[in-house]
Length: 286
Image (cartoon, rainbow, N blue to C red):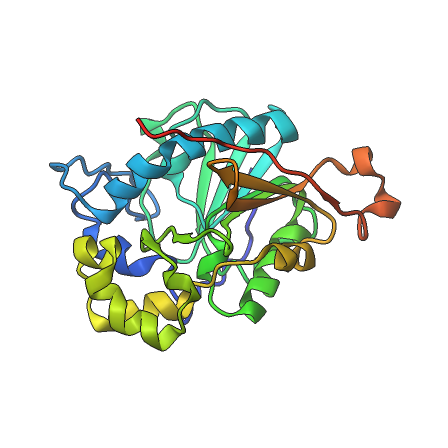
């Protein structure tokens, strides 16, 4: 199925998580976009900020994806839109929908013959201005992306666009109220003013020690990373349930905006229906 007749490529938007991603893309198995070919670079693994993230957050991601399947119950004839993701993410899971379209604002390569069970398209576009008609996809999906688009105004545009283009929806983002800033892996850093963060991140955070970003990269990371509060999730997604992932029973770790099938909530309630739900992922130290 060819979905995009016209593709607008934006080069003036900030890359999602670009600082550490660009610096370490040659050190981890990574997919680079060239429109036709997929090359999985299986170079020797080193300890990078991304390999550290993978180990720390993999349990939550596994449980979260299971919850996604349970709640939205994707059908084999449905199409899924992933805004801000990568093809690599979907290759970890068995195929469960007809087609997946991944939209991102920087390039990845992928080679369909290496994953023959998948029907997947990769498109470069701006998540704040999707080249899609309303409710084009049965499922909209976004994982830890909206906090990287920049300002509150851009976050509102991003939320509005994925909501407009999708029927059912699942959007996850780290919680501002969690004391651990998940990108820097440091306590309380996101509560400091940006100017303080820019001065301290290189020397007082695991992200700074491992990724060794330049000051330009630190400034870009701080300027384009904005964690979202729970009350803001209600404002961004008024027709969704807001699920809360919790860490150690108490601390909110992530928020997930979930829009179930419209027939379950009624079209007349779609624009004003809001309910609070939470599920808890309790992890014990091993």
